[in-house]
Image (cartoon, rainbow, N blue to C red):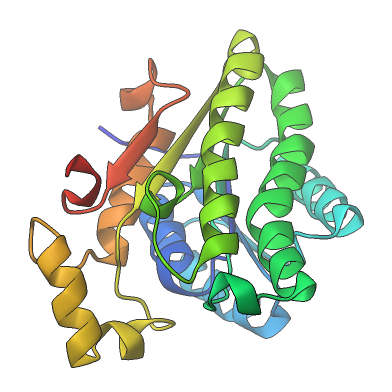
Length: 250
């Protein structure tokens, strides 16, 4: 089960946190990995780690808010591997401020990366998948795309948009053999947020609101990605899989 041998997967934001765990998990299942992030050095480092697992890997520095860079990344992937089987749209950012203090730049920064970037990357890769008549796209949304919270308004709107983008693309591209699904993680400890989540007051508040009384791990999210990327999920499309310790069940 979950055999991805010989498949080619693009993972954005693959050098840290959820993306890093996802890239490694897909590689462990046999997939060749295109490691994408803004940092050329970080991409190269992670790509070498991936190769040590016995699969092929391409490091590609790309700003997913720039269509010309995305198109070049897709062309390079096709040139090296011949096809794209899996796309994981993981790259994302957040700005934490009260709504009345948000600037236009804050808004654009989050929406351009979290929503526009996911659309542009999905569109560029989707065109190739349509020609192939198969593909799997997995968008990393958030439980905060399904429920509200304070002081993260652009993030809420961007992830809610990703949820609807996922459903819309799933309906449009099902006829081409392309499955489009999303994952809505709850609070997961990563190197980027561990300092905040480990603050006693914040930790206590969030854990008390999480039925399982613990944070998730990057590996648990990566496992959900592997499932949706595999043939075991062959009849699933347009679905948002919540991996949130029960938060949204309340």
